[in-house]
Image (tube, rainbow, N blue to C red):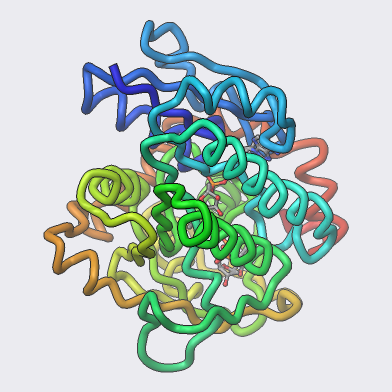
Length: 334
Ligand code: NAD
Ligand code: TYD
């Protein structure tokens, strides 16, 4: 049995990754270490919580004692745990520095001490910053522009330094914007789908022409697994879906799919330091033989359908702290 320690596995991508791994391999056990912040949700793994090959541990990746014991038992560590929402990082960067940077350090120190077979640091395309034309390759300089992306860049390079200095078998992935089931409804797609379902306005920042590359979450999980088995230690891998869209295009797809009027589109003040465009060149990964398996159109339809059919999952998340945050930042539009 191979034991994978997944951190942040109760969040959006981590929970999809755990489901993907347990389905694909019968000889793998997964330990999920998650602090259960506002973004961590046991409902994301309700269908597998009784699986004998799955174990949940509530805890903080900054806590050396918990981390030490779990890394000691692990063959592979996949670090998803992070504060992940750019808007929150603009309002209050503290937790981003603590979890995204210091937490990665605590995990890397334990990996160094116990000699894990593999350490995968889930970084992001946002570490490169914004690009007007063309696409970033893995060797381009990092120019992160939000406290979120800067903290992720810190962890990304710290992980690399543990490979160079201590020979920790680190691999780093930089993926573009994910979408799919179980994404917290503060991010663009689940927020707009669930708002539109309830005929509430969709707050578009600035002119809505910012561009993101979108990838279905299962393709991201598949790429991480592919890189674990086919990648080289000390290397960085861009992962993208090849689906660059302006935010207004995404908004129009959602409204049309749900049969809702364009009058729900509401232009609001822009995000501070809002990156105009993200774009990653994935030729390195493609040359190794990996390709995304889902088309953007089908995956968007599947995702929208999932939120329509799973109101029980998201409705309770759109209250309390979540709503306070949006009212404070963007009026009552959420
Ligand atoms: P998420 O916010 O949905 O989940 C983060 C999880 O980490 C939550 O379960 C939370 O409880 C947990 N967590 C936070 N602080 C913790 C701590 N100190 N100790 C233990 N657990 C903690 O985020 P996500 O969208 O699933 O992103 C997962 C990872 O993927 C992040 O590292 C993010 O930077 C990266 N990433 C995300 C995207 C995207 O589009 N969402 C794209 C590329 C990379
Ligand atoms: P988001 O989902 O927060 O991801 P990221 O900022 O990490 O790329 O936002 C995606 C894009 O959508 C980004 O350009 C900001 C924009 N956006 C809005 O216009 N309105 C919203 O309410 C949100 C959450 C995002």
